[in-house]
Length: 61
Image 1 (cartoon, rainbow, N blue to C red):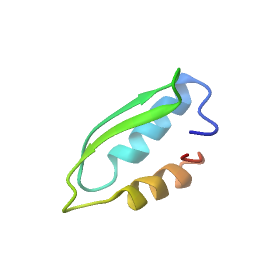
Image 2: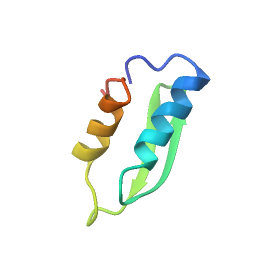
Image 3: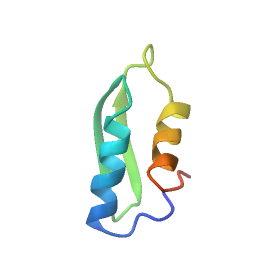
Image 4: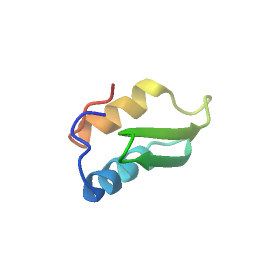
């Protein structure tokens, strides 16, 4: 994830992803610059999650 550089970024991205309806669990890793997301496929999709990340000011890869 581009722009993920500090713990504040981790919290901001985590909250953005968690706000998407259908997301059950999210773990953002600063060192790896990635997020692992557990979500209900019937309620959301990766496109909506990527949009939430972009709206928080970061670029998903």
